[in-house]
Length: 435
Figure 1: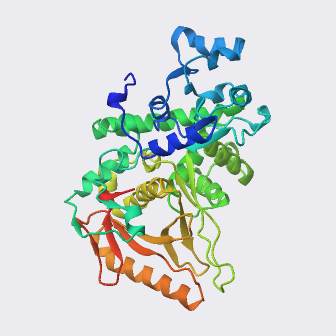
Figure 2: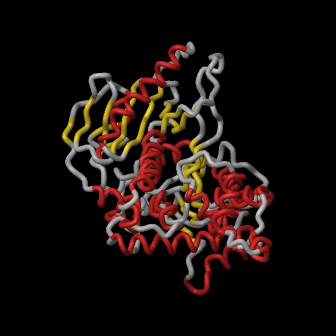
Figure 3: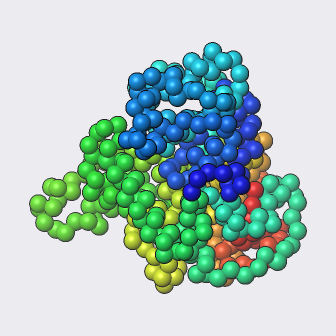
């Protein structure tokens, strides 16, 4: 579909993007392929040079390789799409910004991080970097946004009937993912498209930096990451998982499959550079307290639909195994929470101590205020989730933690109302949550 501002789907980060254009001479919009970077950037640009345009045998790229200055021609803000295909563009953009002495000159988009050895300048102070994720349920129109995350921090909350949603519909939203081009497609077509996307990303990973990597091992590594979605799995555990799950017992197979922790870490780095992995880091409590906190990040794929597609799962399979689906539902909720909290300058963390007491998510604002979240698919789990939140808070109090959460919240899949319990804990359906 050709871009037009009339059919552009508004993103939560649109306003932040305008602020970045006012603050920097150029803005680089990073994110996984297919998350909407190009339309997001076109909506804020006045001209564009599409480096990856396949017309006339990729004429634009060949022109740029002959004369890099041609890519900067056009009314500003001027978009240069998929800049990483010619890494020298970064340094050239920095020089153009220095010469122009103005803000909002250029917009770069990138679907991977190129080898840093090819770039001389960091771009600090000249090029601002903005990360775009796949769409939240609010952005795709699948959440009403009646309950604002910012509003809860500001103690603005009203009990609201939010309407029913079927379990099957919730699963379909997770299988479809937050890919803008799939929003209006039937679930069968969406699931097929995401499976194709995984195949393309494995191909990209196999040849990133023109280094040949074993495609089969990359795929096994990606599937193992998918199996460990929403967990604290270390690279060594994923390596063992690959060997255990794929080994057929034959010596020849063992040799062909052999993969080391070092190789696994390299593969994870490649997936990171393609923006396919999100690390939800551990929440830092008062360092003076006697409470020890685990530091391993919770690892997600950039969208839970990728894990579902990589493992060959579908709506019916997840419907019949709700324990399994719960992992991907949690990942979808944490994707949305990340988008919402980042839109107001905050960050999303997880919490787990050395006694394995944990909280699914911790949303923290720049001013130090934070909130605790438990994520549950069904309403029957609300009571146990509330008990866990209260227990964690009380333990922190007993350990002398001064900073207490601003509020505590249970995000639920199947609740038809948003309300505040008698103990003060919020219960909010994910299909009613917004920024």
